Length: 379
Image 1: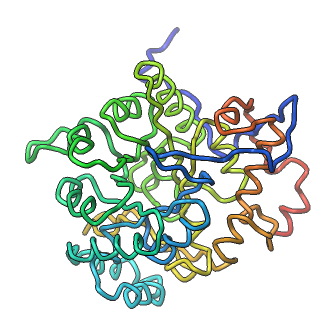
Image 2: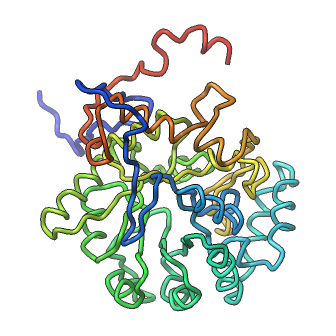
Image 3: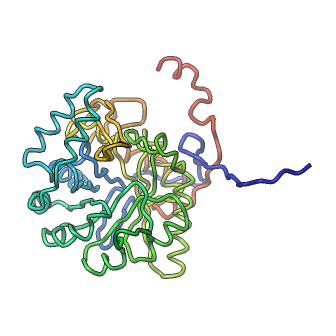
């Protein structure tokens, strides 16, 4: 007897469950073009440092820009709550595992100082670097004029889950079309994981979409809330929305896969799945220049009863330049990320990112373990 079905589930895939198929034609890796655009800005590598206090401060943002990428400064983190953020970062890294969650909640409960927003932005701009900053949707209207006046180049509006439509009895939510009209700088919005949410966000006039809910090494949203979609499927769905929006409007809105990366192969898979760029947290938190000093933590600790982030020890493996360009000193694929991307594109015969999007992919759950018994036994 047939049984009634309440919901139909579809299969979704993460990085370890898929593989890229080599192309029929190969090209030299040094001939590949990795250029990535946000609005009128062009970056020579498709890598963005995440808006997390353990990853990006003024100094690391300047360095990342000089290396051809982009780093996003979190304007609701310790950099704008404290005149002496380095001292606060030291407290976080020295705290014991039993103390750190309560400490983070206390630290992030302090108010943002609006004067520090302009000061941090100017610190990046005066060094000749591209300045990208991030705020939560709830504070975007309040901080946007300050951000624009200080001279920032890109505004990221980020929360765990962001949609173009928000229902609330207490206030009129942020309207992204109005925000885009109010300021001249490009607005990148996230995070989302579905075709419809990405398409609706693009229709508001924004300049980029962040893809990913809960895959980050320091994020516990998936465990606490049970919400998220594996990154390959999320990227492919949002890439389909990007292509549909380009078809209907003639405007190309890049998508940026955010979180869950551990090695170069993951970056390559995200790009083959349709991403225009990737946003990295824990990998770059391992840089000797990272403000987290070998630690990384989520940014949802301010919630007094339900923190959705944790501090993890990632260690220090090398400089930012070494992590991005090599030479690599490790064998786990966490260094020379740009070299990995260029090599994968060369093997796929992709001269640019649009051609990389056309690379064939297969479901391959044994891709990381097949024939690797000796490696696995020695880890």
